[in-house]
Amino acid sequence: LGRRRKARFVALNCGAIPESLIDSELFGHIRGAFTGATTDRPGVFVEANGGTLFLDEIGDMPLGVQARLLRVLQEGEVRPVGGSGTKSIDVRVIAATHVDLGLAVEQGRFRQDLYYRLNVVSLRVPPLRERLDDLPLLAAHFLRKHGGETPPALTAEAIEALVEYSWPGNVRELENALLNAIALRRGQEIGPESLPPQIGGRMRTNGTAVHVDPPSRVTATAPCWPTAAPVDASANATA
Image 1 (cartoon, rainbow, N blue to C red):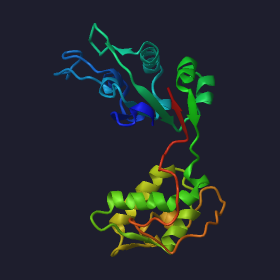
Image 2 (cartoon, one colour; image 1 turned 90 degrees about the vertical axis):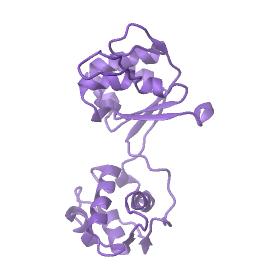
Image 3 (cartoon, rainbow, N blue to C red; image 1 turned 60 degrees about the vertical axis):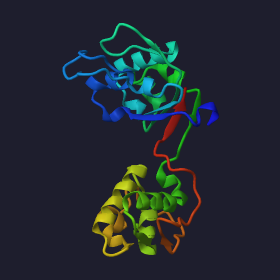
């Protein structure tokens, strides 16, 4: 959106990077800054300069890194690890997390000043179990993504099993379940027998049945129900 819509988009999963390396990923480093730093590296802020930086799972970021991130957002400049100079940046930051950041602030796990700096516009994306109408389009997306040149289709029975499940792992669990089903399917259709046992066996973790009229078939090229673009986060904040 806006003037940056055609500029570069860079994404970083903060929860997937060891604490010892996250500074380098964010802010870059110079050659010799630490063991293994054989060349200069710009970092994602510099890579996204002029565009948008998406920081996924920001709620998992260590407190020390949060302080350095806050300074970058306030000053508009980064200093690479081991470097003495700074570089000015102009980056739109979008952050997402599954963590309740308000509660994390109260518990001392997330900096209050960083929370307010990020929380300019907040958007809550409901968990998958609260938006089951989105499931067929999400399923079709993952079938296209992982199903090869001729993606398989979900049968009505498989869709029924999917919509009756409560999805504690959200959209990531759906993608994993379909990866499993693609690997175990027989032919070009995926039935409930190819889904993980807790799904294909109609197990529900919250004990509540959700009734949604499933389509007769979901294919990778013709999803049956309209929905918003797939997003797997319970809250987003932009700065």
